[in-house]
Image (cartoon, rainbow, N blue to C red; front, side, top):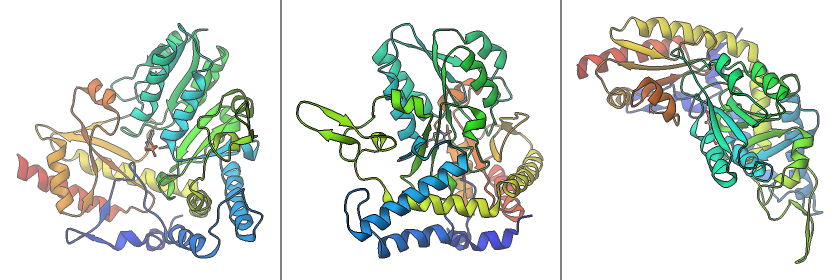
Length: 404
Ligand SMILES: *Cc1c(COP(=O)(O)O)cnc(C)c1O
């Protein structure tokens, strides 16, 4: 089991006061806090081995390159990719999705279909709309129900030989729904479509197994799993990464360059143009080690407890409605209180030291579905506590009294 006091002591920011009150950080869906080991590893990199990678023969460059590749190996093991070169370092989920959407521009033709879901983050909608504009392909949307679950019978009907790629999130950032991605991947493959999974909200809670899932692409951000901002991972099956053109041109991604013809570097470098976030990439490995030490089974069990506890406490508040009541969901609670704008509650509880997200959560289509401008979203991590939930619930009650 998880020793919550020990865990909390790993995160320096959790002792901060905000507006004179102890910080209650429930905006983990937007970004996670960083444990001391990760912060220290960033400093250590710059103090001891900072150099550019893959370029010099000198010792520091070799040390930095080795550390970067060790981290790639850690990520490979963590997600169970078959080869290290199937792991591409990116700047984050958005970068990974754009790289693949851009690559598909060379494959799609007018009349082909790109399928997204009603539950997507804007990052997993807009790049595909841009792709459709470029190629004449059509964007098709898997609908959702009131509970915030995808309607699989509709998905089945939408699939056809025209479907070239299906792209869905593993877990919805706005509602917390855990999507049946194995079903979606297998079904899409029966029609020869590729599948990209946006794992940004899943990796903080579970360890994806890309070979078992058999997805073609899996993308996530480092900053949502205790790593630095500006880091991320694009996993792609080797055959796809070979088939797709590079996303960006530049240094590091070439084999030879002349003005007549440039040949591209082998994987993974073909997709890693320019000097990357070296410290960030290395430290992402440190963050993954840390999470594995805590243990994903412990994380899941504990977060589930927090979710149940907070859900029942919040539902005692009259006029409070939770959006996203899927049977399978993670520790995200999106809610509104009758007649009160979410932003007003967010502002009042911020004064009490509580950080939640208010608004559409980069998922406007979901808000349109429910015909609301936005919600208040409390998203819990394994370093949150029941005491914090009590403080939060009291604050929401207080805000409600003030605003009604
Ligand atoms: C956060 C998030 C993204 C975008 O991630 P960035 O780190 O901003 O690139 C995409 N999809 C989902 C589901 C997310 O939660």
